[in-house]
Image (tube, rainbow, N blue to C red; front, side):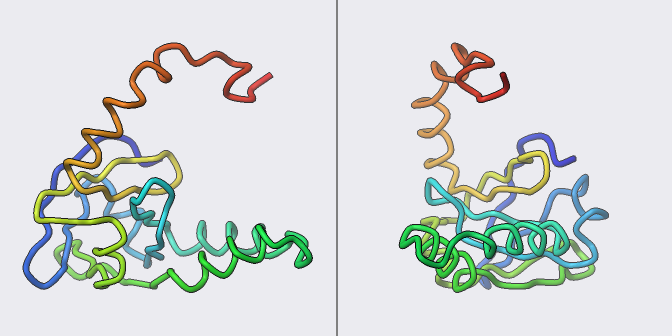
Length: 142
């Protein structure tokens, strides 16, 4: 599982060093894609492949499903972390997530998210109350 919050810096070449705790699980390759809330998602290759297969089973007659599948596929980039655990984020990915030097990498259980540090702080502030008051019913656990 991917857990925790880390604060790596984006270098001048668009490379980001993945947290040491995540490197073994991601060593076989990752897929980087746009995520919701203007963050990036980093999936182990096999997890992304499973997610993409699931999404591709949605009805092609659904405009929303077609848009989601197209956006997911078009915004995905396969990477192999280098020997230092770095991945290179494309210019489109950096622009979408509005990444500056200071980044936040969070574990999201079965994948990793990359955020601009200011955007992450703002997100946490806006959503702290919802986290504190969440119920099983609001999470769909019942």
